[in-house]
Image 1 (cartoon, helix red, strand yellow):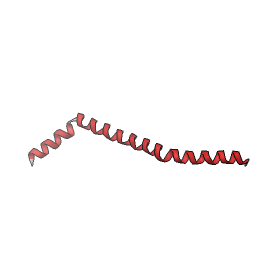
Image 2 (cartoon, one colour; image 1 turned 180 degrees about the vertical axis):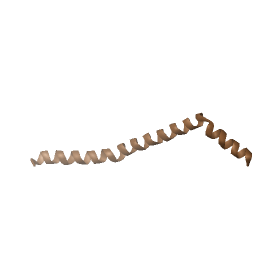
Image 3 (cartoon, one colour; image 1 turned 90 degrees about the vertical axis):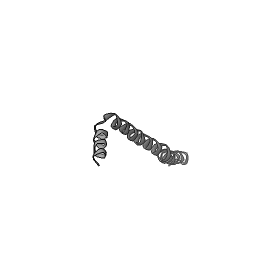
Image 4 (cartoon, helix red, strand yellow; image 1 turned 180 degrees about the horizontal axis):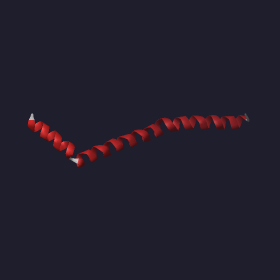
Length: 60
């Protein structure tokens, strides 16, 4: 048990491991945002543009 606690303390003191975790979390957040923009954001934008163009063609 004492060895486990010492390993936990060493892990928490190791800033290099913490930095890698932060980069991974940051990359995951960026990937999620980009995926959301490309999948849902462009569909909504396309629908609005189609409506606007349709209104211009109809003269309304």
